[in-house]
Image (tube, rainbow, N blue to C red):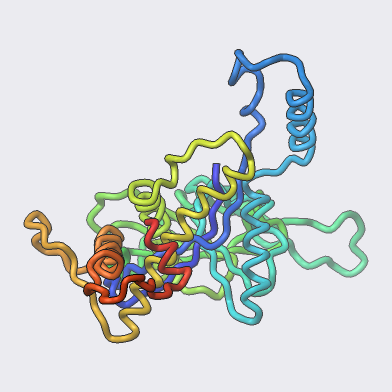
Length: 334
């Protein structure tokens, strides 16, 4: 399983949806894979098997989890960002203590919160002369579901989610989510659909000064990551290669997403230069207004093929190929 960190870019030709560019990759291997149960026909003796078993035991003793790998990438990105603020939107499965505690000063995390989450007030200040261990949390607060059920005055908010205007009813709270973040409170946003078609949802942000609109819009931009996975699998063969050597596994899959990034950056460079590409007209897309990744691949292949195979005839006997940058050569493999 791959743990991937992406950078969201609000490219102007994506109709305010933006695009997610994978930049960091970590391979997670669970404890239940790679044993004799997975391959009963494997040889039970030999130096290679002994070395594989020793490497597997050493890997298991490290207890590397998906949260640890994700936190490692976030810390690395925060060091690259310098003084700039880094806002990370992640799935709720990664919103654990190993990910949230002791974050860098320039990092804020946004994720989904369970509607039955246990929330608390911050610990009260110690009285003069008070003895005993300092309290880590205050009084127990209602869960988000109880807050939503008892709420009467909701704030109407119009947001731009997934490139479309959406009307929602929201209210915010600040509380201590002790099970995941023991020392700092979080900003909680509870959302209700005015039409009643969707159930109530709750989101949180480690930055208590963040607004409800920024929290919801930032989390909605996470959907671009799912689009990147779909395009990488369908068009670039992200899940097709099958290797048995660890180094090959670590190289092949990330290369597909590197090509994915280069294709989008190629289009961004054309747009910055004032050029535009046209997509292949398809009659079933009657209201298509934005370019897709498949359109970019078609345009890129057409440009490379026209340059490589349809150049004017060369008069000299020995043709001299025009020099091409390495990025074009990599993109041509898409």
